[in-house]
Length: 354
Image (cartoon, rainbow, N blue to C red):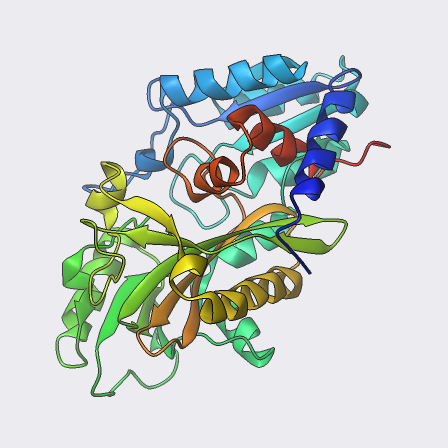
């Protein structure tokens, strides 16, 4: 693993500029105004992860400045129809996929699977890894088996009930949908104890119709670590801490759906606060990315207790890279532009021989 290697990013930027001479980018996104999303949740819409017109315009402008021509789709079925026509040379296409219609666990895996079927290069991890990392409980089991610290966890299944006995621990728990991201289904009432937990589990299962995770709640700090993996080598720079109301210590607070939706938080460099814990956090995130075989851009989310104990709580194989993301904060702090971020997003996954 590597730490603080800005030269690695500069190499990726230069690679992307060379790729632009011979490749077209296919940008496939879910757009808040243009995507036909017929299946959604009530109250906690998956559209919170959809791009706005402004976010898409910024990405497109960066791609153009790097030198790419761009073809854009807002619905997965339109892209599938395009590649199925058989009239295009797909060997010089690069797909950037942020599409995720619907509510099923594999919604971010569809396009990588189609790309594999048609032999199209794409940004990010393969469809198996994308779906695996949506499964919080089973990911946690894999990581724990490989020595990565994760909170104690229990799984409730809609058919069959508790996978093992339900938690009876004295401490606090956090209950959440097992397959969701972007804090969907999460608010302050999700933090509970063993006696109130069953009712919250039933509420979530009735809304989300999926497995529900009950997890040991870690009071302390919340940190996101962008990990860029190129040729199976993860590079990490610094842990990006989350700051709520000018307080870097989250304590028992969480970054819930409402706070994420209105961007009511700030970022900071956690390594300045605690360099020793930050180094362990970076090592943990890099090892996590290797164990799960994440490619290109990924993100490892942690809770860090006030005593400095580290726990991996979530994995993102399609991390946000738009405004107000930890990736944008990271690149800005390292002295790189948003154009550089988009260039690295592409080049981290695509070798020049593709």
